[in-house]
Length: 489
Figure (cartoon, rainbow, N blue to C red):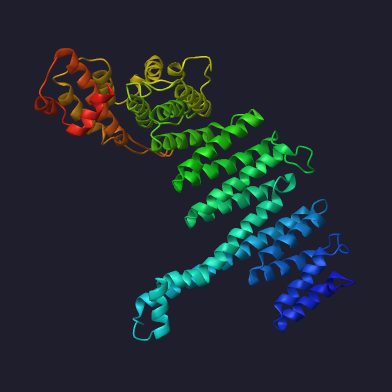
């Protein structure tokens, strides 16, 4: 281990070694100085040494060295000059990102060159054999040789920085910024595996924050600024999870946000809660939880109507129509008929859990069917006057499928309404926090509902009926599909 009387001597020695091509020795010399207990008082020279040290670590892709050096520098700066540590970490992330982008551009340039020129005749026999044996194309090999090492290093950089900054009140803004950049990295390059790991890392950091409450410089989540940073990070996590279509991770992100709200006993701003419910509607729809999807839409409508005074009448009408159609799309029959007591208890527990996430206070002593149900939701929509806000087509469809008895004409009346409803929707105005609404997504479920209603009404009129005659009355579905609906009744 090299020892230096002054930090300036170590920096000078490192530059001399770099000039003669001995970067590893230069890195080791700076590493020895940084980890030495003789130089624990912060001075400007140490900052310059850290910048040079970080540049060497990035140039040589020495992630472990970078982490060791930053941990030691954090000890030096924590109580004296935390801004210096912040600048060094920003420089570290900037260099890592720059080198990763440079490698990606080189790989793209190489790929374009290979695409433009026909080099097939110029390839060496061993290159051809390697490509056939490995099954790799030129781009695959260039990515593996140029891009992958730098992307791995950039990912390691984000993990290192998050680990160093975790649960530190003086650096929580930089922690949040790093998390956001890591999320964007995962989104840009479709890194789903790394995104899951990143979510778990952040989740563990929050768990440790609650576990070790006597930790020095621990963030205070009751402070509005700290809480907002943590919520912003979780909402960004939720957005990226849905954009990557990682629905299980998106649901876990919703639970993280809900847990954070319960922990501090504060509700985020209405604009953030709108994003929360928009993502919940997407998650529940993809997972075929139509009942919870409808309840989430109802909460979203209530929030928009109460807090968004700039919402246009057209946007409000489309959102209200989504609520009513979502409620009607829920299966009108009991799917749990014949289920065991244990299955019913699990279903009740699940409904209570979902109700808490959506924001409905439910008495756990109620029967399972009374926790959340299609009938109670539709009754509440009528009571709250939502049917006065929807489009005329949705209003007519609701009365036709929920109240009228027209077994012979039901299909002929429903079909044109569904055709009009399928064309409604699109992007909403900038005043709306809900980006877009597509009513066409409910058409298949509404066709199924219309089939069920028709079969129910026909059963009150006829004792027996030919299948051919019944098939002509149900233009929406094939025989096999409406036969399945018949068995559900």
